[in-house]
Image 1 (cartoon, rainbow over the protein chains, first blue to last red):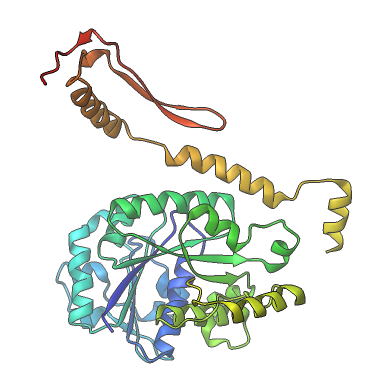
Image 2: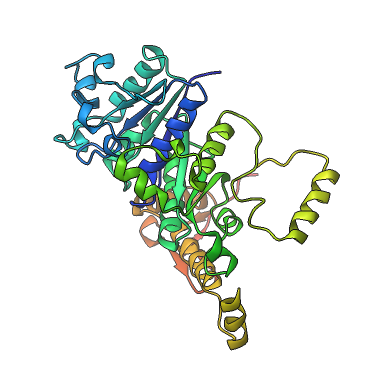
Length: 275
Length: 88
């Protein structure tokens, strides 16, 4: 399988890019892939903290780009997930410290020298210089939104900017969907959001209080087997790997009639549904 | 579920629907947001294309995006000085 780089982006801040980068990276590493997660939020580094690796940061991505250390020296190996590495952001420099071209070189280096199967670049919020850097070397984009009006508006703007940068067909992850609120029709459902943004859905992550616990301790939630978001992340990882498995919550949020209808529809269907 | 029934009995609108219709309107506007540079480039192209057929002055060309509640339109006002002679 060819090596692939993804940018995890959203436009709006606080929708879960860092949590998603950390957990998708971990979930793919648990599927025996060699994964590097890159923190592109220079000056506001956070991916190290969310992953519980903050005490092991010595060198960062700016050091690698400026040739002050070798790639290998800056990569932090995760202890619990074999094959998972973090390339941290610099905390003291600014986003203008690197250029999109330098970012492209770095990703090529990670693919060739690092031999990573997957590279996930955690994009900073906003659409300025840091965003341009983060998307520069992306083969594909993962667009994160929550079911809120402001997040979806910003996501729509980012779709346009990605297109202008020749990154077509970003894949959508809807984060923090509350199944109860969807049921009481006080929150947009995944169909509403896909309909509005008109892009493919990669996955849905349910609202989950356990995420707070996971960031408190610095253990990615995919290590907690009983959590509902963990299972959503694992499904997304398998979909990235090319498996055809349903989106999280597709079966458990429907009543018996809908499920029966779906069962019969599935048996009558000629082609597998492409989601 | 119970809350939903109460709301339905009261005839209140579900906030999801309000959200959707607001969002659709916002995006319809956002998506036609054009930078002044692009509008200028378009103006230039239109001028070149139209001046093949009509006598027009570039300074007279007025172009903008007009938005109303439901529609978004590109409005161009191009005064014509005269026809160009067609060579057949």
